[in-house]
Length: 193
Image (cartoon, rainbow, N blue to C red):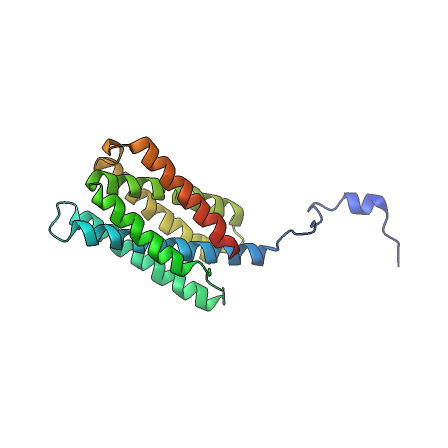
């Protein structure tokens, strides 16, 4: 048996893992956990908006359409969590309250603020899903397909919000920045706990 030489190690194309590096399976588990949490949060945001604006509001049909798509997303991630035996985030009770409160609060501020909320959330989610797709690149075609489909629908929601006055909301820059920061924080937390 030949002894490994320094040249043999140099020809290794993949860098050796460092302490704390996660395996691909661990990364995919985090992806599923955070995506499940995100879709749950989105369902709760639309529930809050719809509770305030009601079924007779001029935007009720749009909100219902987006809400129904988010419910489909959540149902699919509920199945993926079960199939892959991924532990959901322990933050779910907080995301339940926070999502509904965000939706209700922005709806109380008016329909344009509700649309600004949708635009901000979906912009962050679009970026988040794109990062996941780039990280997967052929390593999990099933998960990639789900993410790609849902990302397209989230972009559709963002465009709907823009077409319906998101950027005309009172205090739009501050509102949008705060919501995006909250979403990014929720993503960071949900991956980990």
